[in-house]
Structures are given as C-alpha cells and as structure tokens.
Amino acid sequence: MVGKAQTKTQEQTLEKLTHWVDGRRRFISEPPLLVPLNELFTDEQKELFTPAVLEETWTKYLKSLPEERRRLLSRFRLTDSALRVGGVGSVGTRCIIVLLEGGAEDDAIILQLKEAGASVLEPYTTESSYESAAQRVVQGQRLTQATSDIFLGWHKGAITGTHYYWRQLKDMKGSLNVTGLDKNGFETYLQVCASCLARAHARTGDAAAIAGYIGEGKTLAKAIANFADAYADQTEQDHQALVEAIESGRVTAETGI
Image (cartoon, rainbow, N blue to C red; front, top):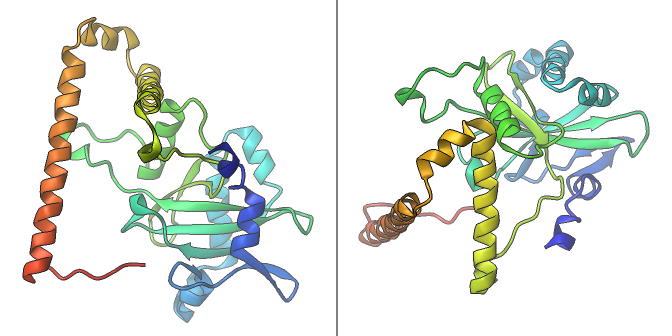
C-alpha cells in the first residue's frame, strides 16, 4: 500500500498528463477523460477568459493560502488548463486541472480545482458564515484534518461565479483493499477510522461535552451500528429496485466510461 502511494507523485502525474508541444509543456488531449479547455471554449468564451481574468483567478487563490505557501506558489505561473473527469464523488460537478510552471524546465506542478456547492444541511440550519461554498469546504478540512493538503485554497469564478477549491492532484494518498482483510485486520482498520473521526470531532466541537453525551456505556455505539445496518439493507433494496426497473424497461441503462 505504501509503495503504491509513493508512486502517486507530481513527477509521475506530469509524465502521464502532459507532453511537449513546440517547446512548451501542455496537457494531453484524451477525450472524454481529459480535454484542454482551449479545445472546449468557443471563440466568444476565449475572448472572455483574458490574461487579466486568469491573473485575477490566480491572485484570489493565492490570497486564500497561508503566507508561507503563498510565497512558494507566487514563483509559479499558470500556463495551461484542462477539464478532467473526476471520481464517483465528483459526478455532476466541474473538475479542472491547471499546470503551474516555475523558472526551470522541469519546475512544474499540477493542481486541481473542484466545484463546491452549498451544504445539504443548509436548508435545515443557519446560513453558512463563509463567503463561498468552497471556503466552507477548505476551512472544514483544515479544522477536522490533522494535516490537510498544503495547497488547499479557494476562489470564486470571476465570470461564472462558480465556487472552486484547489488542492494537489496527486500527493501520495494511499488506501486499503478492505475486501482482502481478515477479521483482525478489519477490526484494526475500523479502529483507525474511528480514531480519526473522533479526533476530527474533538478538534471542532466541545470535546468534554461530546464525551459526556457518549458516556461510558454502549448505547450510542449500538445506535450507530443499528443505523449502519439498516442503511446497508436499504442500499441493497434500492439497488435491487434499480435492477428490476432496468429489466422491465422502465429505466434505460448504458455502460459508462
């Protein structure tokens, strides 16, 4: 797992997603997964996205960073951008990657911009105190995570008004194949996840009040387990209903990418 995570670096990403065109590094065009924005824009849209607009976008993002990271990235310039298909969690939202280049030939990094929407909880609680949905996402990650992406920031589109948060595209993230774990391994994995979740809550709430609410018994733990079990059952029922709808012809299914 560690070995695989160590291959997910900026260097590997640059080799995979860019190539040299007339002496300049550019994103590869691989529709529909990866398409440079200059291939998607109409002539009218190209006129809107002037160098001044791009500079404003870059400046807004830099202002959202802590000073030491702002100084680091201020030595780079934005030279190319592309629309990239994201993972399951990004379905239906815009995901853009940008190429940043410094003063040397191999001095380049890739950042991604992900569209942020309003919280699904907003209709049921008070309005967010943050100016944008992307700022709320970024500050939430900084509050709950022990260590967030060093380039985590945000900006609001000058033309479209879309809220984006920025982060690295590849930063050696790792994951476990939980289907291959035995009982002891799975219990260890759950303990690690629970510890991370508990720490996040303790960082952002009243730790003493939370501990008092939970108490020393197993009532809350059982309630959470019962909810998870019921949720899993409902998911299976929903999937079966979808399969039956497809088989009856009420729903049309097509294979995706």
